[in-house]
Length: 63
Image (cartoon, rainbow, N blue to C red; front, side, top):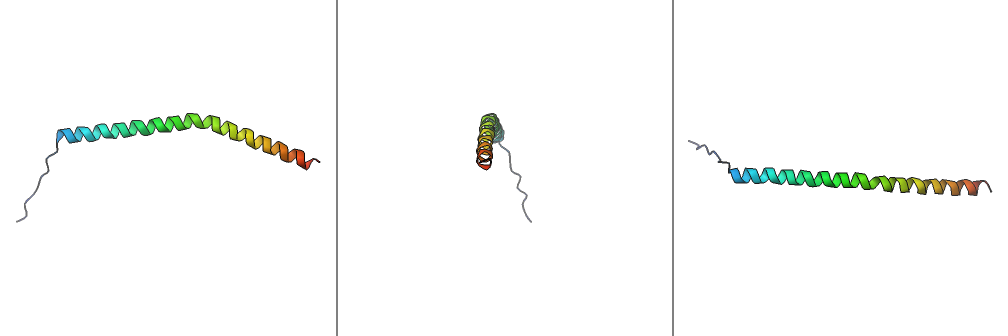
């Protein structure tokens, strides 16, 4: 006969893992927001660089 083993859940470990999940989720959200807000300046700068490159190409083509 096979014995049935029922694992007991420890309230402390369950609470700890839930807290850990929320900390990881909060950290990931913070990184996502920080990355999204800082990328606006990067995209604007990239757009300006592309525009300047286009102007240089246009100027060289008109010679």
